[in-house]
Image (cartoon, rainbow, N blue to C red; front, side, top):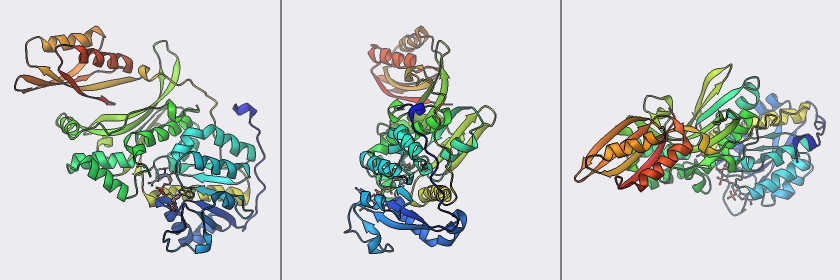
Length: 446
Ligand code: NDP
Ligand code: HSE
């Protein structure tokens, strides 16, 4: 359904100053438990900010067999749908995770005229259009600040603060788990497996951490940021995605020796292809960042996002990107916003995809490569390799060579070129007799 076809309902009638907002909390895990605790502990402050109390009237979980100290037994249920359907529920907070089941729950809530707050980036990146249409048709709110970079107010910044500007580029570290792992491997020499286990213990990783380490979580966030920033529907499957599971301790050591750190970056840009047609691109991949660049010093589970906008110039946002408390902060900010609208009337700005730019082919992106190769240590090898780059019009920025007995390790860093050209060169290098092995290829962004 196009935006024009979507029925626009009037915002739901205001409940009125002092009215209680009935909240259904779906999920009581890392995030849900903190939302419950903070809303309860600061009840009066929330009531003052909203204009009436926000009361959690039910908590949906997957089992009633777990100990949940602090939650009255009668609030707990395993029947999320029945909880959503209750007449005393005005607002549904979804912090379960996953896609299909929360999609059903969120759609049911929106269609029955209840506003929704979700922290679920996988759901928003996969079904933003359907969810936005349902919210629009019912005249209710759909908030998802916590879906990108937890406590850092990226969604509000893109949706409201920069609504008067033209954004060119959004880039940065948007996954706390992978940043924690890469930082631990670099700074303490921790193994990949130990660092991932620690990130999971600390509540940063997704229920299935494959989503973190394979870059899917960051890709969902990139899709959301690109959609909001470029007023264009960008979905999860539009984002080029490589995770960190193939990054080795050796890659990190080589990067450090060359003056770089390896970070998993999400990069969203407006670009022009070779014929000058403007489009949007979003990608997630391990990236070499110069050690003096601010992104290199983003440690542990912190996130940092750079925005380049025409009038505002360059902006940087930094803070806690994962964990129960920081995420609850973002969820509760949305609870206040949605509850205010329930009490006083009105709706938050919804999505706007008017620009509807095409999604660029990843091959059109301008990037740089750091190529680590094993080559025979003999005359002419360097010439063959540099000719392979020259034949494609790509210029080499630096070359480093280390000898190992009869072979040599050659590290080539290129100047900027289109992704498809650089990828073709790597394929050719892999087929040369003068190259024993292409050990790794990592992109540079600066
Ligand atoms: P958890 O796995 O810790 O918690 C999930 C909760 O959902 C649990 O309470 C679980 O119940 C409940 N649940 C699972 N299945 C069902 C079901 N069928 N019906 C009812 N309840 C169910 O996840 P998190 O709190 O870490 O994450 C929640 C959401 O927030 C995810 O979308 C995640 O991507 C997002 N998020 C998480 C961040 C983080 O740092 N953790 C940061 C930003 C966003 P039970 O307790 O019985 O197992
Ligand atoms: N698993 C996510 C991360 C949680 O590590 O960043 C925050 O979205």
